[in-house]
Image (cartoon, rainbow, N blue to C red; front, side):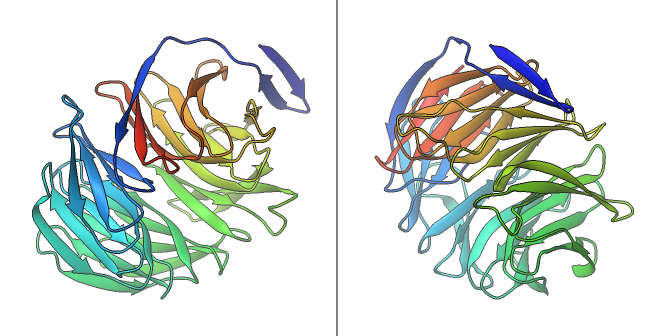
Length: 360
């Protein structure tokens, strides 16, 4: 491993070996986003047509849960154990509980083009970003009643601070973030963040909001992360690599990991306390470039996992050293989820209808 410091930026190159085992589980066609049900350690992965697969954590048996057309995302409520699947072409959310064909399954109508979702487990409310009619639908988990809240143009990213009960919505085409008061279900602020904001994440311990902003030249120029102070709505911009599209926060270390979706993108590591950055170079696969997508963090082991759809690599960053190691997965991996309880990593492989299970 070689490190190089230039003008306050630390770049890390190279790979290190790590022991692990892995196997694949067949699921539905074109698997994508996934989530863990904490009560059972089951994995839910949405498939590209009209269903989701539920993988048992002990037997690795797979059951199929019917969903709507083109399910896009899935989240699980860590308190109730209910899972929510956004069906992007049905304008619905499928709500269900557990293994089999989905016990207590319900279908909830939402806005047009539901994509990403976020949950406040303290209030049992789920927030759905509807990209095609510029709204967020609030689903009350107790009554399954809904409220639609107008937001900016083409909402994509969404995150919740469960401590303050604020919801943050990244509006890709209006270049801003809408802040929703979770107590009143009303938009209370619109914060300009820069051109083409895509993803948003919240650190509830610091009340800071991080928005991945691609920028006007995201195909050829670096983007940034806009940091929003949750108390004052003041903003600070931190430069990143090309086309920052995904980010995740390790709340234990207060570090933010930002993945560049553009070919040859790297990973920007932001120190949440100081705003200083380090850049971790990603080894390229067989085609000579990288296109990073999903990011997941195991806060127990302080490891960061990233999919690279242009290689057969799952990229693993040691959060203590920024050293990189690789796990072999099929080409066109699309999503990664970590279960810190059993230290398992799940990678959705969109090309061959499988999930790779990695036991670290």
